[in-house]
Length: 105
Image (tube, rainbow, N blue to C red; front, side, top):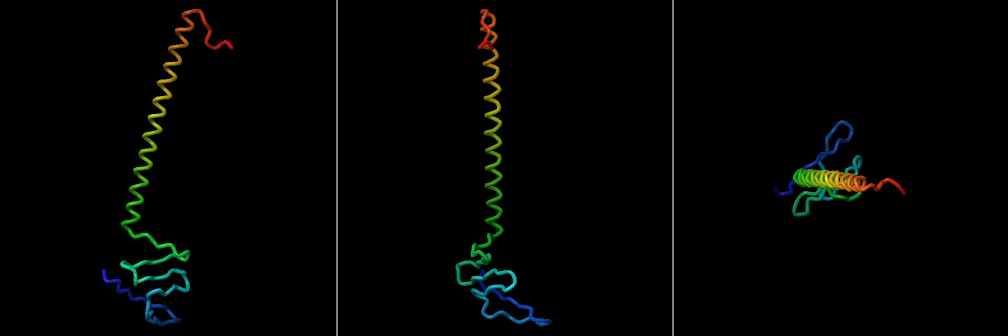
């Protein structure tokens, strides 16, 4: 809540306090800690911010809704295609009843 972060770096067999940790970059992981922002930011090696748990959960929910909507659209398209096929079959039968071959070129 207060952006008070402590870190420790292993040097051989001892731990050394990282002071200051603000804007410190991990030599092994390449990630950077930014404590000066309104909220703690941890930046990836490409300087993009790691998402928080809440942000990840929101994205998962958005993707879930998006997938559900896509599935509904696919089902609706499938239903429309089935209806169009039935209509085409009925029209073909009507043509055959009139003595016209709908499949003739």
